[in-house]
Every structure is written in C-alpha cells, then in structure tokens.
Image (cartoon, rainbow, N blue to C red; front, side, top):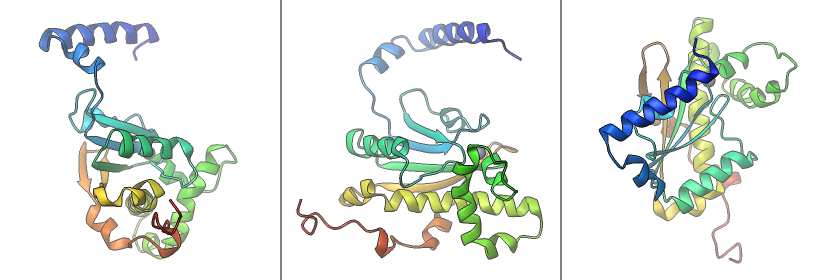
Length: 214
Ligand SMILES: [Zn+2]
C-alpha cells in the first residue's frame, strides 16, 4: 500500500514522464480549459473518470458523488452543470453508474442511521418507485444490478429535466446514461433504456422565456 509521501513522488515521476513524452503539455493546458465532455459519476475509487475512458487531463469535466446522483437541490452538482453547459459549452453529458455500487446496495438494506443515509434516501425512493421491476429479478445480486441501472436512468432524466438543460434546449445537449462494471472494466450504454423511461414531466417543465417575462 503506498504511503502519503509516495504520492508526491509519484506525481513528480508522472509529470516528468508526461513532459518527456509530450513537451509543453502542461504549458498548453495552463492556458485553456476546453473539455468536450461532462462526467457525472460515483465517488467510488474504482471508477476514475479519465482513466476508464482513456482521456488526458483537460478533456473531461468531472463531478462525482456517492451513487452518481443528480439531486434537484444539490447546488454543487447544479453549479457544475451550469458551468459545463453555459460556460464550457459542453455538448455531451455522461451520467455513469457502476455495478457493485455501495450506495445503491445500501439503498436495498436497512439504514445505518449515519449521515450518508440521508443521501442514499434518494436511491431508496427510486427503489420504491420501481419496486416491481427490481423485485422481478431472481436474486439479491441481480436486484442490486437492476437498481444500479435504474438509478442511472433516473439521474439522466434529472439532468434532462433540470432548468439548466431546458433553458439550453435549442443547443441539443446530449445526455448519455452509461454503466461501468468494476469486475470487467467495461462500460455499457444504457441510453436506450433511459429513453424508454419518459420525456420531461409537465410538472417539471420550466416556463418558456416569454411566459416567464424574461
Ligand atoms: Zn458507487
């Protein structure tokens, strides 16, 4: 297991190697940030965004939290979304969940009484809403996998329904739902599943600019 001191040495070695391979790499990065993608993923240490999609620093804007949630009132996530869409002008947003997610697994078990339970409650609500779909799976492991997928789908809908995305509707920002398997290192595209869920609920629509007096 590496010690904390090793990390700084690792950094120096990585930086020197990168600079040898691509002279001027960091100088170029320092002058601009133009990522093509926004990644909303789980905080799980086994799902490092850049690494699993093979992208260098500077190419993906990243937001991560426990169970890759997009909560309507989470200012942290909403600020990332706003900056990504309206300042960085990103056209592709990836919501990526993963099988074996501890946050999703916890949502199918009794609460611990810890602070994290309040966060996981959002996943419990999804489990409750899609109970028949989850319980149709034959084993506990399959039920967790299904809830991992449904969680991704719901978070994609949350991004699409967000006022940030609705206000940018004419730009046709694409929102993708992916799931990563920590057991084989592969990503799978769940977007067709998400598309089958539903369009923006009327109750979640923001008023068009004219009606809102803007
Ligand atoms: Zn997770």
